[in-house]
Image (cartoon, rainbow, N blue to C red):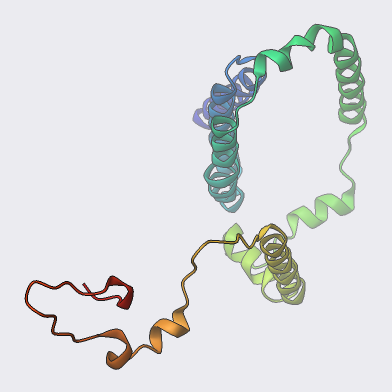
Length: 208
């Protein structure tokens, strides 16, 4: 009874939050409603024993994706009134697309059936006595180790490529030369001078 109450509570908040993401007039509020939906979806994952997916949802989507959305929405100067100007014009087309998607989901849900092979594979959980996270880690770092490493290399290549493509050399900007700094000695870094009384020192020499 308690689990059913918690499920309906989380599920109701997820549905309400998803609806508010669409209906909120302020885009910042939409992102905040989206974060609330992610948190409650993580709670639903915890109810079915998928704690790894729950933590990934909180860490990746709430901690990175939703925060990125929030900062982008807050920093970009977007004229939302202009974007809403064509809402009524495209409303019939949007409703038609939504109707088609809803019909497809209803047909898919009505014809959904688990095959005996799928049920058998779900029942055979690898590593008896292990949690979902331990079982997933065991499979990921044994059977799919090379695939996991290859995906990491692909992501690293994409990150380096993005840095190289967006890096710009701006003229007139002084940059730090670590090698030149480390090569400095006391002879070329310090200048001792004895100016005459009442006379200054030439600032071009770098000494005051």
